[in-house]
Image (cartoon, rainbow, N blue to C red; front, side, top):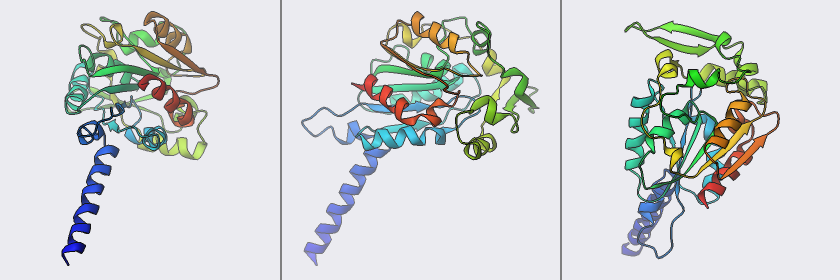
Length: 268
């Protein structure tokens, strides 16, 4: 009986350690070991998406031994969203690779500023602003974005607006290289961003100015022009740039292997 009980305790302890690794607590859980743990990868989604969009990427990272956290980005405002992501970063022990898609790039650029634990930033078809630039400003800096004409506003109780992409237009606009049935479900599950968030200007030092950055450029992006993505990578003096010819704005969904490979390059 005592032996059975000891065995059950050992199994439970192993399960707790495994769960800690899967939800991004790996560095803390493994701190007692002699080896250096892999960095935790924190994935931040952008507008009109949610955390589940990272599932294909997260599965590959976990398989390769990386602790992963897919953050819930509120999409309410750059400063407030960054503060929430920053709180999540502060809860993680050890080095971090921070990844942002689309508007999520605005958020990670502020959330990681001055954080010594964030060792690399990965921008996936994302905004990488300077202070004084908004997502709206950047999206029209180069021609090619057709997002504005697909947006449908919903008036909020405080007088502000939530913005959705028209469900019928979503697959072509956002996810043209994702299977249509999957893109249609993404359209249903999309989370809105406030108009104020897209108009809010970045403030203060931006993390990419001091932390090594990596850029995945979606070559057929209809939300953020590829020319802007290349400009941002050049401005940031990116450590590495990967371009996906024909990649839509949802390149992290359509090309999870390429996305995960760039993240792992940043992690190394």
